[in-house]
Amino acid sequence: MCIVADKVKSVSEVVRTISDGSHIALGGFAIARNVITVVHELIRQQKKNLTLSQCVMGMEADLLVGAGLVGRIILGGGSLDRFGLLACVNRARETGQVISLDYSSLSICFGYLAGALGISFIPIKSLIASEVLDRLEAGPAAEELRRMKCPFTGEDYLLLKAITPDVSLVHVQVADREGNCQIDGPRWENEEQAKAARRVIAITEELVPTEHIQRFPERTVIPAHRVEAVIHQPFGAHPTAVFGCYDYDADHLKLYVEHMKRPERVREYLETYVLSTRDHWEYLEKTGGLKRMNQLKANRIFGY
Amino acid sequence: MEEIRATEIMAAAGARELRDNDVIVVGLGLPQVAAVLAKRTHAPGLTSLLEIGVVNMNPVDTPVGLADSRIFYRSTCWSGFLDILGMNLHRGIVDVGFLGALEVDRFGNINTTLLKEAPGKVRYINGSSGGNDVASLAKRVIIIMRHEKRKLPMALAHLTSPGFVGGKSRREMGLRGEGPHRVVTNMAILGFDPETHAASLLSLHPGIRVEEVVANTGFPLRVPKEVAVTPLPTPEELRLLREEIDPQRAYLG
Image 1 (cartoon, one colour):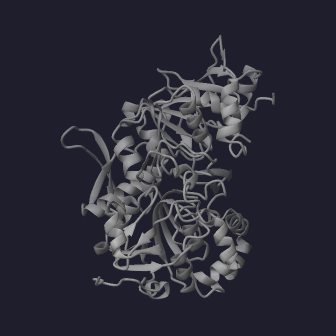
Image 2: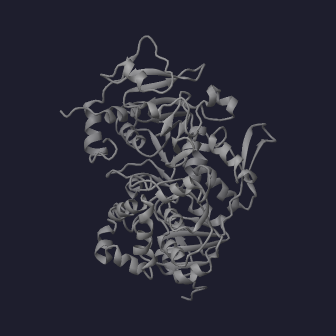
Image 3: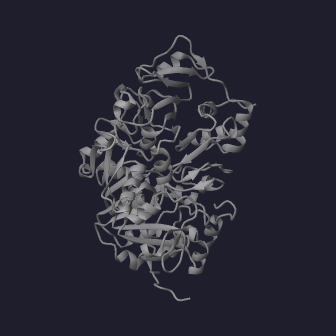
């Protein structure tokens, strides 16, 4: 069968197309399906002054902020679940190293939805009557928020400006060479986020023939015509989990947290696992290689 | 039998606040444990929703949080924020929002963002995530947290999620949800006065005295003449908590 367009590219060539100052939407959630492959390459290429947005930030955002690539974050919240807090993100918020626009999960998701629908704003009934909104209105997000009454019912609403990222990065279980992306398990804001963005870059665990996509089209969350490039990287989200493929690497997450909670050790982590590795394969070798990855492989019934 | 822990009383008391057939949105931590306990005991018709996009979690292994595949396995629907927080919570059909907190004030306002260490110095912890959405929109909100004076202060370090802000009614604030309903702690259960919206003591856990609760509360707490005693977890609840829901004591300590 002929392939319409082969979008498979290497991570380094894709990252070269992301310019300094870009607004990047990250596709992970805490310790699940983080776009580690691309994050590492962004750090290797030393991008500058990025804006990040996401409903619930995780290790991917923490790495980028820790490496000093980020000027602004737009977020609902974030953590590494029971492994700990986002030490780099929190420190950067405390010192003012990043401008932090703290929303809620739903308001970020609604912002992406408006972007995806091509409408310039969206009304919402949360955030009202909280310091979250007071701070946003008093800060750099003032121009992105309005209050109004519904012209039909008179009810009070907050209006959020649409969020339209320059690039959306999403890690998926399965994609074909044309860019049809299938996601297994919950999808958090992946669909709204990707469809709100100007460009979508997918990182896939497995590259499958289009016939496989055609056999299960109901699993396709982001279809090919919305996807600009596909990066094929098995264990590409390590040490975060990919449902149905592998579990999170608890040992490495603990090691990460231990490093990042001390500012003087951030550099050490980045040197060892990112800057001194040429690509994700070398990173995987450093974190335990084939033996470790095999231990993390998901049980076929449980998905972890 | 092993001595009953305060966290087990909290989980069981939290579970009992849930009614059969409630639709609930569950936050990270003990709320997850309490929701699973309720579903496996008195509330088999409970529908639990997780913001990540999971309906009816039913884990066989204890998850480390919301983003754990352990909580995806065996659930009945996978979706995302737009479905859970949008088309359920924002739609107005969620009966209970079940949340944890760093700080709660006497009007049930919640801080999950940051703490003040010294004047002008803050320490960031997390943020809202779905917390503000849930507190704004769920019909009733149940908070589960440790009972400490600094965690129940007169003034919050940051008001992340609204209860009855400044004692105002929810209607005045323009919010759809009916606001805070219970605060379940390791010492007591608190409720909110329908008129003044201020917190009052509803029940004491066995062995806890009123003075202890008052001494560990940073805001003035209304104490009625007669205070009920929180029932202890039943042997079956304890068995479920210890053997099935959290055998490694990740949440129960």
